[in-house]
Length: 150
Image (tube, rainbow, N blue to C red):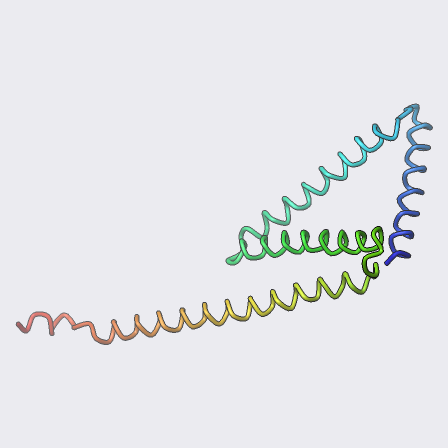
C-alpha cells in the first residue's frame, strides 16, 4: 500500500511540475494555491458533469434510487477504506496494505449482494402473492348473468 501511495504521489508531483511549467510557458505565473484553484476546479466540474450524465441515465431505470445509492455508498466506502489505511500508515497502528482496503471493499460488496438477494426474494414473493390474489378475485367475481339472478 505504501508503495502504491508513493507511486501515485510521484505521478502527481510530475503532473504538478509539468502544469506549472506549461502555465509558465503560456505566460502565467501561478502560485501553488492558484494552480490548485484552477486544476481542482476544472477536475471537480468535469467530475460533476460526468456524474450528472450517469445519474440522469440511471434515473430512467426501475431501481434507479438503489443504483444511485449503491454508487454513492461505494464512493464513500472507497474513501473510508483508504483513509483507514493511510491513518494506519501514519500512526503505525496496524499495517498499511492495499489488500486490507480490497478486503474491506469486498466485505461491502458481499454484504450488499446478500441485501440484494433478500430484497429480490421479498419483492418476488410480494409480486407472486399479489398476482395470486388478483387471479383469485377475478375467478370469484360473479359474472354479469350471475349478478342479475337475484
